[in-house]
Length: 234
Image (cartoon, rainbow, N blue to C red):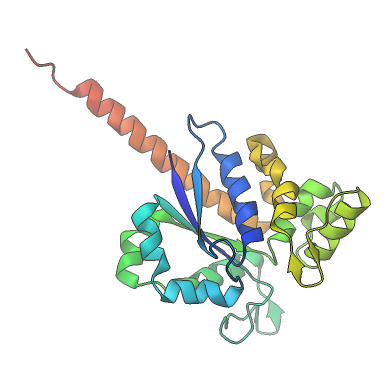
């Protein structure tokens, strides 16, 4: 069984990532275990705490008990003080994947370099353009709104409530259970794969899972070959 630790902005984001991981590995013999690292249940969240948790060495601690670590953050506030990643260059907004990679570089600065290099294949980044709510829109809309990258929380709430479902938030409060329900269809691998390209941040995250799965498959094949080629004892 694969074990994933998750450092995220909030419990709502953890629910979405959990459903994505469950869907991606749906065909495995055992479903993965997803363990919250930051925030822990009933503790505060926020993008500043993502950076603080990395500074405290939570990545190192997480990989003592998990096989892999997912680090999530949204890019809607990437220019705020303390985050400090520009989304523009030469007066032009950077392409989404450039923004994703620069945010990853920023997150890596808070992780011990030697530890990161040693565990580079165990750390995955879920960087949302602009927010993780944008990843949910393909599950809610069939038109161009499914590819929105701004105003996604409002768009998601409008469609959910129009369909008689619970909204993701009210005022500043977000409801993790509503995020869980809204992202439940990502537990179906086919649905996840059909919609992965709707948001560049989601696609980037799934690409990392593809690489991980390829490594796992290669390791399993290597182990099988070693077993087949083991000389028989007399």
